[in-house]
Length: 170
Image 1 (cartoon, rainbow, N blue to C red):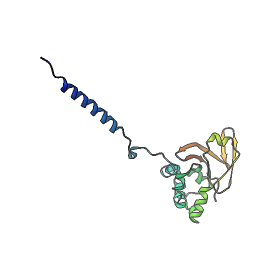
Image 2 (spheres, rainbow, N blue to C red):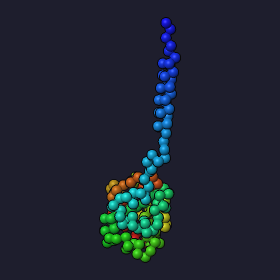
Image 3 (cartoon, one colour):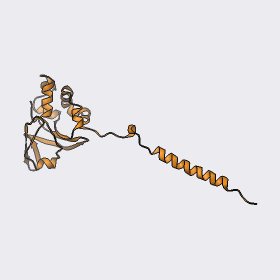
Image 4 (cartoon, rainbow, N blue to C red):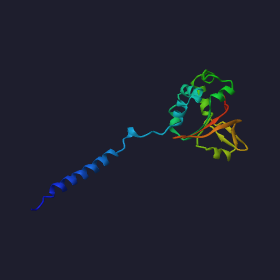
C-alpha cells in the first residue's frame, strides 16, 4: 500500500512559513521602542548636581536651543556656584530672562571640543564672542581659571565639561 505523504509535507511547509513570518514581523523596529539619545538639556534637567544651572536654563527658555546644535557646554555644578557665593539661580535670573540667556551663552562654544582638544588650544570664543582663556597645568585644563573637574560628558549633541567655578557671571 502506498502512503500519502502530502499531508506531512503540507504541514511542514506551513509550519516553516509561519515560523519565518513570526520572525520577520516580530523583529520589525518601532519608533516607540527605540531609546532616544540623551541631549545636553536632558543631562542638565535630570542631574541634581546641576539644579542651579537647570533653573537658569529654564528661566532663559533655552531648553530647545540646547537640544539642537553640536556644541560644548562648560557647566558649573552646584559646588561651583557655591564657590562664587551663588546659592540660588535668582542671583543670575533676577534681572530677567536675558541675563540668564547671556550667562548660559557665555559658557557655550559652537563646536564639540573634547578634553584632549582643549589641551591643544589656548582660547576659544563663546556664543557671545567672549574669550575663554584655556590654561594647562600638568594634565589639568582650566577655562578662565575654572578647572575642568569632570571631563567629556557625552551627549547626543555635544559634550559637557563640568567646571569647578563660574567662568563668567554676566
